[in-house]
Length: 77
Image (cartoon, rainbow, N blue to C red):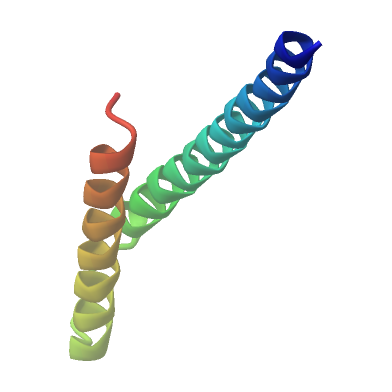
């Protein structure tokens, strides 16, 4: 009886761990896709001679690079 109870509890724990990993993976993939959309949108912005725009674009690109680096560490593709 103990063996059956232990096996049942173990399968529940493993199922929860697997489900959590799949949900985390789905969230990471969603962030990854958004990161690429942001990157492509920023690249499509035409630079204008306004210094504030250049700085904003630079900051956005740096943040996108940081997001991409963090995602690469978590989920290599």
